[in-house]
Length: 340
Ligand code: SF4
Image (cartoon, rainbow, N blue to C red; front, side, top):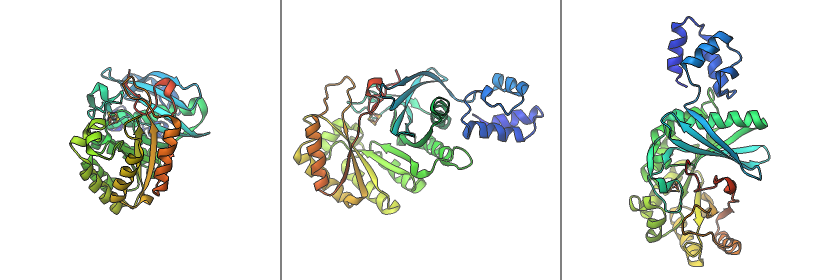
């Protein structure tokens, strides 16, 4: 919603100033998604606003709910007809986390990722990012009376290639006068965009940083995360050390496991050494993510191999979690978003 334009419009039409605040609160606090839901306004004004202003910059094209009910995928259509996807994940019985998109497609082109295979179409605007939150929050409120407890920028795109819009959206999401989610409940996941990590440390030291590692040698990582050719592991390590020194915050390490590629004993040792060269193990939480099928040649390792890999990392002193796959049946799991 363009509140500047709305303010000018209301003033021009002699509408009292307090109406603007009512609209503001209806959208940001009560998650109204249509003018009919802004019941506090007189009906004639609602009808006028319906003709003049859209509440959200995107339309919900499709909503898919996973069989287990623990994931909900939204396909949103933007004004230019392009589509993006956003996923709600139920982490606890009434706690939902929103996985938000920052771009249409992604320029990084990781070969195992459905988004990456499409390449970049364009960046999303701050409103297109924030509106993913508002539309999902509105749906959750209406269908379950639940709230979104956290946000992670891990949907489509590399957030730091669209830093300014992502930054503006984080400000709206965390501003107590607008959506008001605590900064500690907002995470940004990068494929290793070094300048972005450095800016993020300065701009949002209270938010969480996650990064996708997937391999701790340049040769393999060049293939799995092509951004490594621009920002190799040595540069990434330096940026992460500086980030941790500056923020004193723990960093989340995303490590997708592929059968026969990156889950051996020697790779666990390499991963441990690489992280220890960045900072002490207490500064990391390693999230192991068994690969989710996206139609490529990759496979996830067997469960017992994942367990062994996780155990080795724990022996090296790291906190390790193995991500439970959620939403795979609706192609809403990690790496599966394609904006179909
Ligand atoms: S995994 Fe992330 S960075 Fe890589 S192509 Fe997919 S969206 Fe882009």
